[in-house]
Length: 206
Image 1 (cartoon, one colour):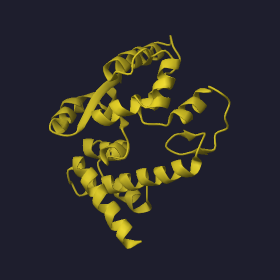
Image 2 (tube, one colour):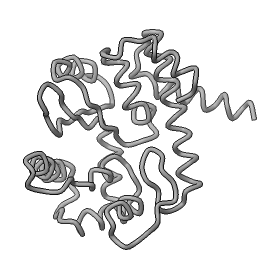
Image 3 (cartoon, helix red, strand yellow):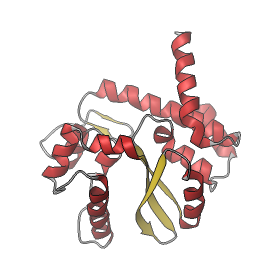
């Protein structure tokens, strides 16, 4: 987050749904990530569903704790393609997922998250795969084959740090644009279009 975006954020209502979506979900809204987690008060669930009704975005409840819910905000087609990529599918099957159909992955993941909440199971770090984290980094974080962490950004990086750092910079740019839109009360679901225009302008300026 840039300093300018940080000062804008300080002026905004932190409970506003658009503000929270800008803060937590800018990369997926910008179309440069398959999904993001969104943690909000449960009373905003119906409002979120209404906002997403005619959009490219989907929301899935993963966990509820007191008055808050943890959701996966995602682009269905992109996420379906992502979990079927060679390395992601291989890791999912290695850790007990017998299908890469999205609804079946969700079902097993929710069972594991619930088991963790009850103190019966370790946290299912494979959630990182559904968040679009590269399989090599999820493997490294889970300790499957010893690797040294090379960088920490939006996730812990175990391979190709330069590539991931450049990607994290794009995520930061998406967040800056999203917070600016939220501050100006623009429709944050239009972030993908705004991000694409900003990207073209940056290329022309080089």
